[in-house]
Length: 91
Image (cartoon, rainbow, N blue to C red; front, side, top):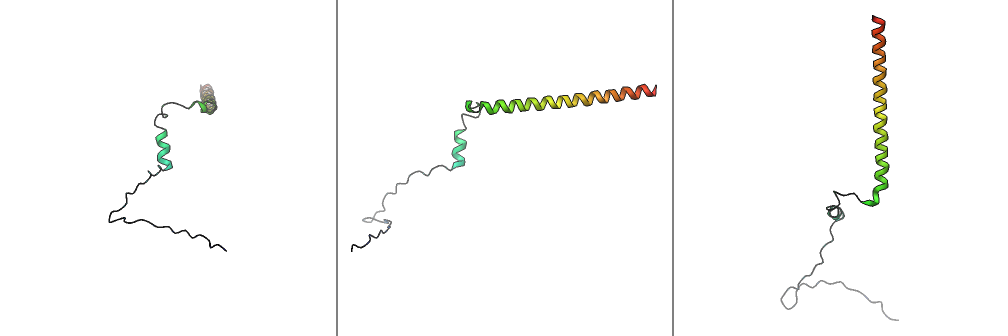
């Protein structure tokens, strides 16, 4: 029966009195730093793939602004009617 092969991991410290040249691959940039580097040219322009989202968000913003405007208008009209009614009663 053949014997199983054993693997031994070693580190070369010195060859003929000189340390070997260590070549290291550059470490990959961490995810967070790499993500920000991709945004450098894209901060000022919108990605065209997201236009449906911007349209929907714009419609929601317009509806909210109009709703707030209508509510403020109705409150203003009610206050004016109450003030006119009070003036009419006090005359």
